[in-house]
Length: 365
Image (cartoon, rainbow, N blue to C red; front, top):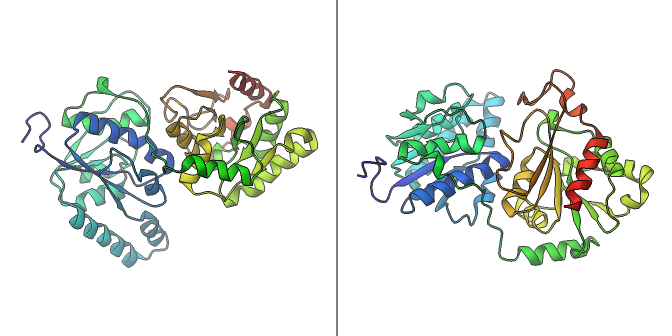
């Protein structure tokens, strides 16, 4: 037993971060720093689809346990408690199959993840200080609390009881693309009449939080007002349900800036997460609000320009260089609420003209 870490020489560590896309990518920084600190450790990660696919090929993760939390969440919401119990029973079976573990790091901090940590049977369960209630009931020890608000640095506190120090932090998230990502991107762009040799501005207009949205027309207006060079091609990614909103932006451009509209395409619903990441990697710039694809862009090294209101880059934003932020001037911001009681006031206060000027500067740089 190593006295400094309280772990055996080749420890088996389970990390729990089930979802979502951005948070799982944030947590890859914990895996990276853990392996730099304890290279002999075997790291297993408990993750839920679809985010678990982002961990495929990650050099810092030795094994991924895929457990679908959506089954549990749906069962609870529909009061099918027998199904919820069977879902937890399946998790316990997976822990027995892939364990035992010398330590569990719960960096999600939910009541649910606390239950899952307990079901591992591991005698050392380390939690972090988050806003969720009930999780510490299932932990055997809590990581030190810190003043820093950024999620990555807060996740990393889970390593501190093992002897890791904040000054040892190496920034950066990790996403390993498939070996053929470049040929995939080239073929995709060719099929959609996009020239990969010319600049590609990807514009992501939707998020999973309603109060993070900038209205589609506002996106259209800021793109119209920005002096976007004539060789820049616009690509709008998204989920299938985003298509009507993207069409609203494109309709605005067709009326106000038809030349720009002719250089724009919608690819919503046409890619998996990993395929989207490959396309983002081949893009020149990624314009977005705070949402999962922003962190795909960070992980693959593509510069971003992101718009912020109910959240802030000091809490969630990319820590690696090459990223630009526009923060709402509204006095009410950073509430971190999924729904705004004030009519999306912070995002509504964002000026298309101001963002257009910033976007011009970013494109020129």
